[in-house]
Length: 183
Picture 1 (cartoon, helix red, strand yellow):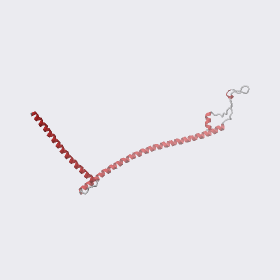
Picture 2 (cartoon, helix red, strand yellow):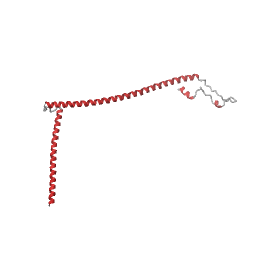
Picture 3 (cartoon, rainbow, N blue to C red):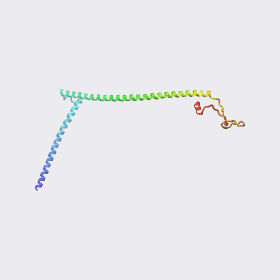
Picture 4 (cartoon, rainbow, N blue to C red):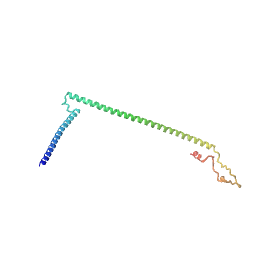
């Protein structure tokens, strides 16, 4: 029986401790809630003042503090804006330099290509002049079309060997040169 009573007292004491801890926790939560609610109201009131609302309740000193706070905020905002603009300007200047360098490279390539085209055109023109002058020279200096052969003539007037073929017109130029003359 004593053991039962002891257990009862232990459990009832533990239960009282839990109940008291819960009530303290609830009290802490209520107190914490009130603090947070007051902070939220203060922040909302300050926000309204910064937006220019509900200024009638402020006295002269509070208005001066609000004005100083706004000026300080504007200085920070302008400073940040200037910093961002300077970063943007420097980035654009880097891009400009890069594009100018790329433009110089492209201009050099274009000049080289134009130079090569002019040289090619001059070479082609020179080749045309050379081939036309050489073809007219070849036509003037060409021997008459005869078929001279060193093969002996057989008895009876017949020619033996390659000369036995019908006579061909020869002007004394190899065939690969003739293709340039005719074109």
